[in-house]
Picture 1 (cartoon, rainbow, N blue to C red):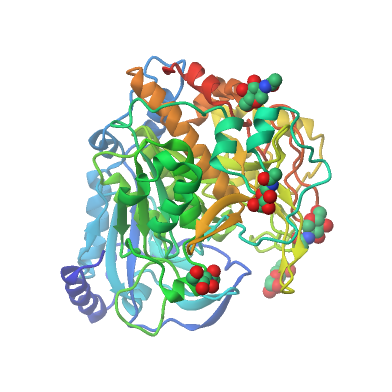
Picture 2 (tube, rainbow, N blue to C red; picture 1 turned 90 degrees about the vertical axis):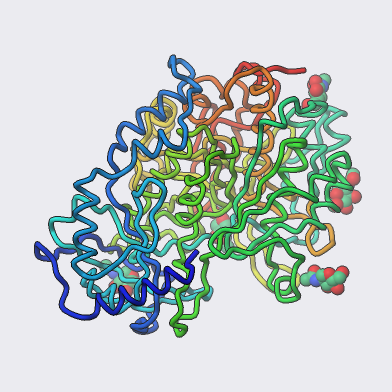
Length: 611
Ligand SMILES: *[C@@H]1O[C@H](CO)[C@@H](O)[C@H](O)[C@H]1NC(C)=O
Ligand SMILES: *[C@@H]1O[C@H](CO)[C@@H](O)[C@H](O)[C@H]1NC(C)=O
Ligand SMILES: *[C@@H]1O[C@H](CO)[C@@H](O)[C@H](O)[C@H]1NC(C)=O
Ligand SMILES: *[C@@H]1O[C@H](CO)[C@@H](O)[C@H](O)[C@H]1NC(C)=O
Ligand SMILES: *[C@@H]1O[C@H](CO)[C@@H](O)[C@H](O)[C@H]1NC(C)=O
């Protein structure tokens, strides 16, 4: 992303910024601070010459209006339902006021700093500066922090701004965000495969003939969710995208092997789906020996195979965004910002046309991110929604929180459940996981120690309530009544007024897939999410074929009508934090949401055309 010109201007800017004391109209005050999450350890001062691409979130002109429009065009009972906005119309709503931009530019200019890039709506300004200049500009100190699983970042837990800018800048990153994209997958295969005591093969011979609990395949999904036999009618107008972070990139030869075995008519689609490379993300190439050793691209392979197995002939689009840890703090060249989501969504919003669905199988604990940052990234997702794209995120693989980590990051160390971000953002659709077939129940596989002596934690569909985002209007009734019916269970461990997630669910245990030329199985809400995206892309196909707009931001429709086209999951719970966690019940619950798809019903409810 940073070209020669940007580097050159950054160096000039750096010289100017270092030339004298900071100039500001008003005194500095602390703008934001965030506790360093427990998994990070300070290992020293950041080198002053290390260059960071600093992203300034300039206050958006009229986000309240944008949110209102989003809810209106996504509400099936509103006259403007389906009237999604163009890129320019969205930009118009979020572009900062002239006053705001002038004040920010004045502050940067007074300090000799030249912006190196703007987001398309100018609501984010990028400046590339050495750490020592940023430390003056934000009256802070950068330290190097190392994650317990490895990987270093340069961060400043507290930072300041001139008082008169506090209302004009929402956040500046990377400063105090410790977000670390984590793939929501479990690729450990125990021998023998875990099958729970309550599992009984279906008495329905059609289902039983194609669904194998040890290795679930596209034919099982097609049968279980009733997409079998559906032929796409609008694939020239439709698309589904998926995100890759952490150096992941989908491997075409593996996707071809998978499709040749499980969806032969779709095999050619592995050859030519576009792979966009953003911010120096990985491109289109076979696995290198190092990547094979590291297990890279298991997630990316799962995602593309789960989608292609169900959504053919809907075109598929892959996005690989760079900017992930680890980084080398000793190298004083411009490096990534370690904020790949933001980089990706800014890039996406600069595009004129978007796929109708985009799935993402990465997340982190909400509390690793300061609220100001979570809110601004979530606001970006609202813009994508207003343009008519459904954003699907995996809900996490640890129920209410991974055992032993359920400690608040607010300075008190109190025990609490750990919601995940971005699924906790109210403008996205979070996808949980199920297993078994008749009935489907919450996906759960207990902790075990493998033959190699390595122990693996519990895997359960993730769910809970946000501590940052309040309950959105579309789930007011369902989420409130769920909380009331808990009758005080888990009081004090979660935010009763928070946005509850997931919204929907699908299979997520032992997916058949190929990696490194070999077949295996892999689990996680990482699997449920692209599978659900694939099914919903077929619903969009039926809508587009009927001359109707695609579903767009799903939740208002799901909670009002769409849930009637889902199978309610009522058994199991979000096991985590050493307790059973939120139970699946009749109606919405924070472990499987409203349930799993029944394709023809969803099409009928949405008003699509079945051939
Ligand atoms: C068996 O399952 C298939 C696929 O879901 C379904 O179409 C069929 O109606 C089921 N049969 C019975 C007897 O329930
Ligand atoms: C189910 O899948 C497992 C793992 O691939 C395989 O070993 C087993 O033979 C399959 N069972 C049936 C009935 O096909
Ligand atoms: C919370 O835990 C951290 C890390 O173990 C410790 O340094 C800190 O003193 C604790 N704070 C409180 C208030 O107990
Ligand atoms: C990758 O595939 C090669 C060739 O089949 C094989 O020799 C190697 O063991 C595989 N590596 C892993 C980690 O699966
Ligand atoms: C797995 O979950 C059970 C049930 O809550 C709990 O007792 C156990 O400690 C958990 N184990 C691990 C390793 O997370």
